[in-house]
Length: 305
Image (cartoon, rainbow, N blue to C red; front, side, top):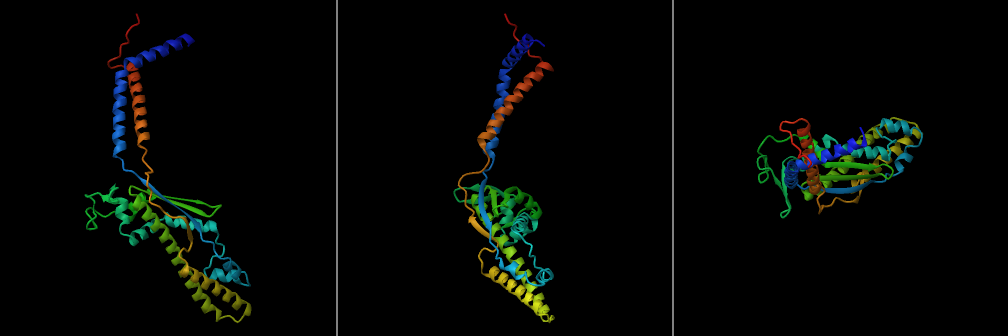
């Protein structure tokens, strides 16, 4: 194909689009209007964020286990001395992302399930959630349809929750998106508080079991070195119980607490409207070209004088 042929083809294409300009404008306008209506119908979503760090563990646990027989006794007592900050980060994030944890949150706060599954909109004046009246009666805390299971709520939970961690700095970043900025903040605060409490209770139970085992075994041995190692292990577990009972934050320090966001996080209505206009314009051009090459009623170009 020569340069002249290309020039003629481009001119023919321009003439074709110019002849069909009204149809292109019409299709573009329809898509623009639809995209604007869609953008205006979407609820605003707000994102509350929090930054957390791991509580620095005492080095006494490891030193207490370094004596003769400490490693073996620790294993028998169920004490994991190889625990690292990386494993703690993984434990925390896996706990937060688990179905069991969401089920626990729903048992702690009865508003979690309806706020996740039945929220329809947010009243910015009263700062309260408006629930779907066909699904949930908020005034009487009653489900009008079959109550969603925690597995159904879990899908929404994972869409609205984001968990990231920087292993190099032992930092965890949590965020919750929701149509209510107030619920986003309160729910994130609940997540942080309950994951800390759950891990606290697990360590307390493990420590109590270890103390019971060590106390029963120390009377059965006559070796001074073994008794010394057991006493160190008992002291270590007593320290664990003390810290679990007196510490406000057991495994997580709050660097930046959850906040009530003032500005929406999504959707971007201008972006949705722009994409609608672009899509309508492109489809309008494609429709004109298809009608020309596969004509039902072919567009006749006005001949040049």
